[in-house]
Length: 200
Ligand SMILES: [Zn+2]
Image 1 (spheres, helix red, strand yellow):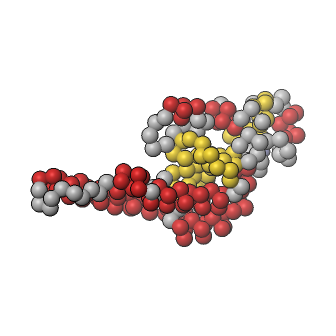
Image 2 (cartoon, helix red, strand yellow):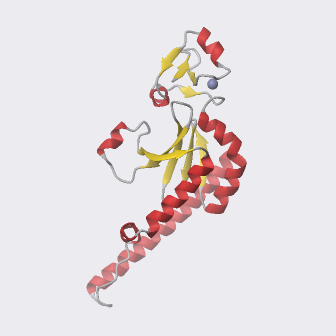
Image 3 (cartoon, helix red, strand yellow):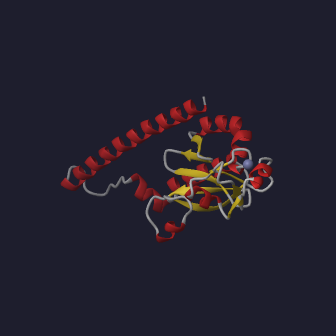
């Protein structure tokens, strides 16, 4: 539940110290923060639970993320997390908590209902942003090490006799994949630098 005044276009959670002023200006009631997003209403930085956590964890986060190859930045009242393998956003819940959204890798019908387009809610209760970072790292490690996921991700197949046409084609594909991965790594480093620059 959030309140906002049409004058300010900023929504507040109950209990915010700015709320008194908003209620005087004919406050509008919104059920969810995603509704606020749809209407182009910004969430107040003082009472946005994501922003509160971001501010209090920023220092620890900077160290943790640098050590573990995570990029993070805050934008539009959300915090984005990015690794070599996955992308995430931390969003507020409607009761003042925080939740983790995972970027879709393929389209599912249920994704249309997601309040964050292109992302689905990760069913995991988080209390802090560091919590979320740890979860993201575990998630990546799991995806990279379970056999089913590994086959798809590494794309490296052997089996055809060395020197055969099939074998050469596979070598070519592997080379291409290596090049793609190298580009991905470079882009990721740019992202990290960019997010550091944005924090100043
Ligand atoms: Zn507020």
